[in-house]
Image 1 (tube, rainbow, N blue to C red):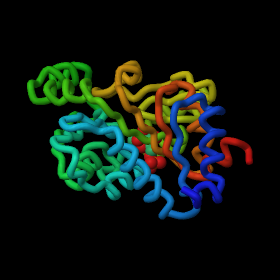
Image 2 (cartoon, helix red, strand yellow):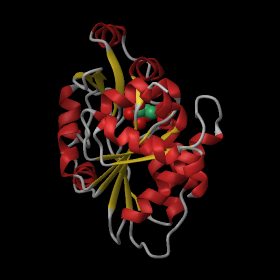
Image 3 (tube, protein in one colour):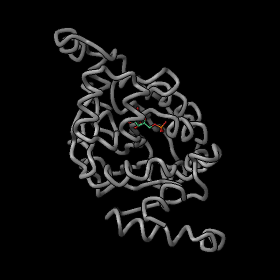
Length: 254
Ligand code: F6P
């Protein structure tokens, strides 16, 4: 902790809490845009933060992305916590398999020695197919587990970066650009004011569900994500943010 004090990380945390009006911020040293190990440090900090808040039998919903993959990688079992159940927060968002919530959820559960349930809902479905699929007992059961989660751990991305990574249709891409989206989380795209300007249709946690979730942890870093973090946090006052020095300094204009 003396080290963190010396590095000025504590100071950055206090300033960020004030600037973003959120309850908790953890800043790790470095900039994950420049050094890959910083993502793992955010992962480690996130695991600690999760363990401090989890109790036996809790359900944890996780999103996809490379940052969440780092959280999964850093996960370790906690002898004090039993029967933790991991579920993906939402259905398919157009990510590659390695970045999908299902993949990360399974990996995190294995490392935590917990259990997991997956959501098998393809990305692009017709309305009819979609409506009958969500009535399937096995899908319905997982959706109910997701809706009753006590913790959500999610990533935040830059809007254009995410839209490109997901091979978004030309039409949606234009909409995202025209409406000046800067942030993306859970398949929702936000403008600088934190307003939703586009949404990927899928099942699972919706933005409206978040206020009911006891612990919401956002993990996102790198100076390139500063704008995205600032915009998204306008929508998420009860969240805890785990970030890095790169994003923190860019956000504070330091
Ligand atoms: O697609 C899942 C997701 O969590 C997005 O909501 C988020 O914008 C993105 O991944 C973050 O990805 P990364 O951690 O790789 O920057």
